[in-house]
Length: 353
Ligand SMILES: Nc1ncnc2c1ncn2[C@@H]1O[C@H](COP(=O)(O)OP(=O)(O)OP(=O)(O)O)[C@@H](O)[C@H]1O
Ligand SMILES: [Mg+2]
Image 1 (cartoon, rainbow, N blue to C red):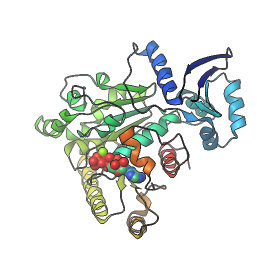
Image 2 (image 1 turned 135 degrees about the vertical axis):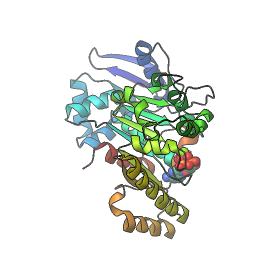
Image 3 (image 1 turned 90 degrees about the horizontal axis):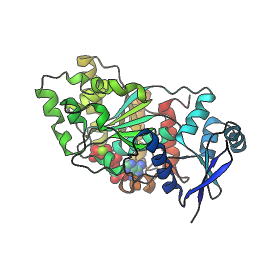
Image 4 (image 1 turned 120 degrees about the horizontal axis):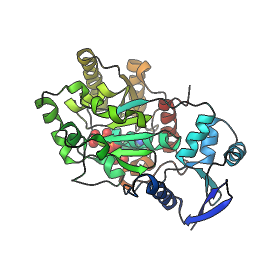
């Protein structure tokens, strides 16, 4: 069992907190919340919210030693496990900010008519990784299947969810669960299956069914990620209109390609009807280099929608497959899954040119 120590460089005190990195950060997060949130914290099965110091160094283009020295001389916190050093999202933010990085404010939604294309997986992993780089993240689960909420350990039929906000039953602040100090989630449950009926029957403005309710908390976050159900619904229209970017995951199969064409068509109609300023971005997922269908479909996407594709694509992997079910991070150990989602995240938050 490896022990993990919080090193406070300012007064050189070493405090033994627990025995596994995952446990430790949860405790650190709880400690942090005790002072700011009345001690409340969402139970999460996703424990690892720390970034390896070596990953942060590589991303900003300096050596591990240089980053160590920089962190130490500025009195920032490092967390040590056997031979591995980590920093918290807050420390990453301070390092990035001091090096001139500016966190942009953006709302991003994951949408696709076809189910099972990795919308939720992508929302989760981009949210986690962006947060590790210091981004203040809010995940919003708008899908009544609530898979994103489950991935963070929230399975609560009585939770306050988006439908309660638009019905005026609660201010949006009451729906927010804190997974870590700067990674928050608005969960979902079956009550959200009423979203479309309420949006359409209540003479509400569909286009602002997400944006108007986000506005009171907009400035608290850099990145708001909306995970949606696989359909062309009123709530998905509202999610598009609230977004700067709509990420459209597509898989290497013909149905997925057909779903992409239909979803893009629908987004075009939403733009002309409601005047949203969102940009659709296609993310190819579950790419399998051994299968011809993967190569063919990727080529087809590039030929037909080249300029709308994200620069990275996500390879198929068992690490990703397990991520939602087990709630385990893919960013702890080296893998294709880690590399792919790291690159997509950096592209989205502007860490790559
Ligand atoms: N890169 C990948 N490699 C292997 N499996 C993957 C990958 N990405 C996602 N999966 C798996 O595909 C399945 C569907 O993923 P996910 O739930 O994220 O899709 P979704 O689009 O959100 O589905 P839904 O439309 O039902 O909401 C899950 O079992 C997930 O683990
Ligand atoms: Mg999903």
